[in-house]
Image (cartoon, rainbow, N blue to C red; front, top):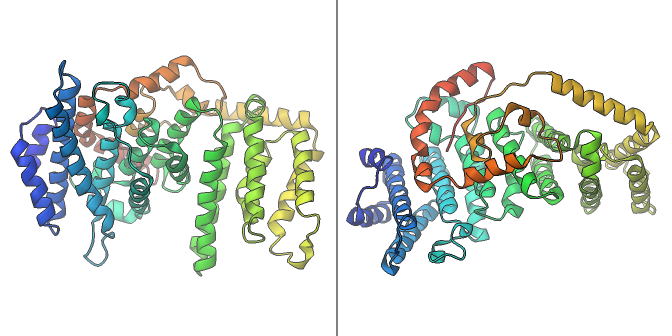
Length: 455
């Protein structure tokens, strides 16, 4: 199976009868060795990809060939879906981490290959596929489990064959690619992905950053996506607080939520960015306040964990309006009855009052100076292959200017070009992964945890 996999990376191989045999093996031998199962699935995926490539490059496509490809694709979906039902490995039982990663990556690549936008209004429109929300939810749950793998576990697996295809970076790239290519709706999956922005090291953060840049190029109002991401992070924090006595984990989840808010709000640094995104910032603050007041005082920490970072970007008139809004929300509430529970609210209000009392001109000059200093400092530019999913030709200057509100048309065209990469180049992508091992080791020496990969 491994030799067949290596061969199929370079050329199409007629394995029509073998394909059916592979399905039979997977169905009848559920306890098969994980490496064997991985290569069986990989060979199925490559065969389906080559069949699709053949159809897309044919001048005449028969109904029989279409039906055959759809049947093969659906059979592969069924086998991949089987692994959603199996819990992660525990005490020698269940799906292993490497196989779970493989399932996530293959499934994401298939959804990208067969995304509906590729085939709408064509003679092969029946090839278009969109996973339902239930399947997408199961996919992300499996992805999240891989993202939460400890650094120690990744170190133990560092020398395994094909490890570049089987780590948290590959999983995040695969999930982010679904949004970048429009293979699945961004409304639910994008906030989940972005909520992990600051949780898993520099490489994963770079992937998420470029996903955000990609989304902002296509959609001006990111308030709903940002707010949902912040809510996910805050829920993770509250879950630990109210269900566990682990103070260390609680502190970590709190820091992750605050760091996420800081990183997302940094997309609106500078007077021009704040002016262009005024309504977006105001919406995040107002709806964030509403969310916090839906469960008082339990959710009030959301104000100081997340909303306060965006409130600091408000203009003076908007701050006054927000203070009045907060006053109306608490008009008939005695906050002195539970001073500890209401402390986040009081801290938030005090912060707004402090900002409103400052001279707006001084504040803008200070912000401008801060931004200028940031531009003068050279940034590290890790060679992260996953970034190419979103912007093949992006420059280091663009990375420093991700907070700018306007983008050049050339940048948008670069993203479009990436999404139009021929299918066969996508198939061959995994052959590049092994060449990244040296770069991955170099990045490990520079930072504590920054492995570079591409899926």
